[in-house]
Every structure is written in structure tokens, then in C-alpha cells.
Length: 250
Image (cartoon, rainbow, N blue to C red; front, side, top):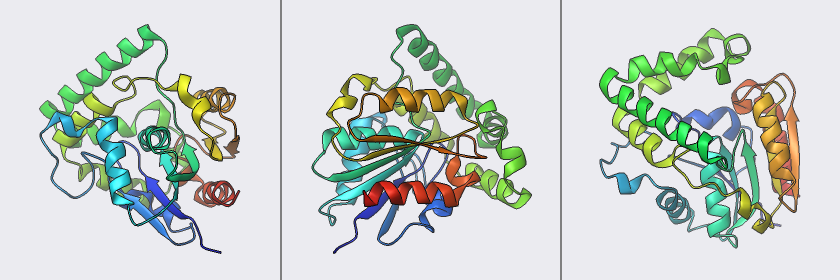
């Protein structure tokens, strides 16, 4: 029996390489991809390259040699994964989403997030990636990393962020940020493949979001990872990989 390939998508400020704590624990074949504005390639200056439709098409193009694949996405990568699964349902055999939201449904909250992301994108361009790396690491969403990751792990995480192209990050926020993308909560019922909604038990906001999403998806399990915050693949990679493997094998 052939093994389903796992295609892994990183979060904002990440890269394919940044997902190594997870990908190294998954059975082959595994393919980690760089999303628009991320990774070692120079960032495009064309805003049209930073849309969910473009990102989803890029994932499908990069996986053309797989008849089907399991799609694993973290945060922003999870949003991309959802769009791929909805646009190309025959290609996606299973879906594992880590700390993922299907968009912001409330119009006022969405408008507030768009404004905040626009302002942050402007600051990234004006103040540079070193300022941004410090700002991003200090966000409350990542507070658990300060005591759950080692000094070496935090140093590596900072180095990964410093390697980002500030223009690519800014354009990614403007085109693919949580507010910029149309919410797709109303379409979750279209998903027919097995779906694992993976959250850290300490990430209370996304635990509620995962439970709400699971209520709309036909084959969904909420996988709460103990002793982990938003980035479970960094703080609890063994448990996260086990949850992904269960989903892919179901």
C-alpha cells in the first residue's frame, strides 16, 4: 500500500526549513514548501503574487507529481491549506491544521485587523526586519516559547526571522493576512476529507476557534496538545507529529 505524501506549509515569518521540527518526525514522503514572500528566494514586488488564490495554485503546481497528498498547515499556512482543500478537494486526502483560523467573520473585527496589519506592514518596511523580529517574538501569542524553547531554539527562530525579506513580509500581510482574506467559515461544511484541528492547550483563543470549526466539518477532530502554546510543532513536536500521522492514516 502506498504512503500518502505530507505537504507542509509554514506560518507567517517562517519557511519550509522552519518546519523541520515537524517534518523530520513525519514518515516519507514529506514536502515542505515556501509560501509567497518567504524562504530564500527573492520576494516578488507584485501584489498579485500575494493572494490566497495565487498561493493555493502554487501549492497545487508544486505537488503535481502527487496524485493526492495530506496537507499540513500552521497558522497562515493553515489558511492556505484550507483554501487549497476547498479549491482542489480531489487532491487533498487529509487536512491537519495547527493553530489555524478560517478567517475573521465579524466585520468590525476584520476591519480592525486589516488596519493593524497595514500599519505593521508599513513599519516593517520603514524600520526593518530586525525591529520586526523583536516585536514579533514579544507578542502574547508566543509567550509560552520564552520558557518552553531552549536558548538555542529561540536564537535559531530569531535568525530565521532576520533572514526574511521585509518587502515580502509586508506584502504577505497586506494580501494574505487574517483580515485581508475573505472568511471561509461558511464553506467548512464542504470539506469531506479527515481533518485534524491541532491546538496547544495553553492557546485558549485558538482552542475555542478549533472547536467552533470542528462543529462545521464532517470529519474533524480537535487535537489538544498538552504543555504547548500556539506553535505546537515547535513546543511539542512529538505530540504534534503523532496527531498529524493519525489524521493522515485515518
